[in-house]
Length: 361
Ligand SMILES: NC(=O)c1ccc[n+]([C@@H]2O[C@H](COP(=O)([O-])OP(=O)(O)OC[C@H]3O[C@@H](n4cnc5c(N)ncnc54)[C@H](O)[C@@H]3O)[C@@H](O)[C@H]2O)c1
Image (spheres, helix red, strand yellow):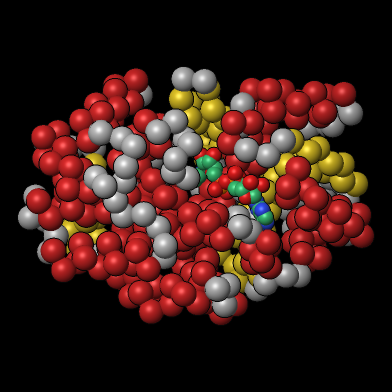
């Protein structure tokens, strides 16, 4: 088992990465949580696959788990699902010392985490992520949120879990396209922070996507380590944490313009990562050969590197509008070379439009 500790003072916690061995969870929980009442929050898909196994493990380990199953899908990451969690906790008299365990992908992690952050001003929270995206990104770092009809993740908090338990075996049942979407975030870590890791990914992409145990373990652990390191430096995104948004500025705009129906999040991020690299090349920040490597690895992973169903001008307009709503300047995370990025705030909209025009199918 691999262990990565996020050093955040009294909010410190450990991410455990293992292949199977879910039965170790209770003994790891004992180090941080003594009270026995636990609510496992999951969705219909993941619940059917893994809820019974997790409840058994918790029962055997001396905890008293109860189960709440939410509908599956991003559209249920809303106030109605949140209300269901509060109702369950209140109707069943869960006290302040209780724990919520999120068993699922980023959607369940985000809703359950927000419920844990706010129920009785905060109860214990544990992440048991089941998608690659949640393992390498959403479960680590303490961002929790629900969506509002006017925008994604607009209602949320920073609330760190007490521990994260990653069981790589869960990925065996994950649909391939979801695996690729999580892999987009893995590629991101190489680009923003670690050229050697990027090189490793260039060699081993097929192995990771075929769920080769060793490659998977290395990729998840390295990704979590990079995220942990960045979050430790800037827990609440005052500055450097923003580099984790590499590829997300253009990606989010394409996702929302296509009404979340055409591209999955990881696919939109993949397009956004290519766009950011090409914007960097136009500004003579990065060599074309490096941009080519970024583009090639995305292609190798079966992720999109061009787009359709959205107009370049509309994408740039959406980026500007979204940032205004949030009271932020438009800032792009652009690569200098693989492994090093910079935050740049004065990129001309016309240049971004030109780059996007070249990428439009
Ligand atoms: N909090 C953060 O820091 C952070 C970071 C990135 C993304 N997010 C959020 O994460 C969400 C996306 O997460 P996601 O990509 O994990 O999507 P998801 O949670 O919707 O999961 C994708 C699909 O896979 C299914 N699934 C999950 N695990 C499975 C398994 N082991 N076997 C079979 N099916 C399985 C789910 O039921 C779902 O249908 C978005 O809401 C995004 O905003 C949060």
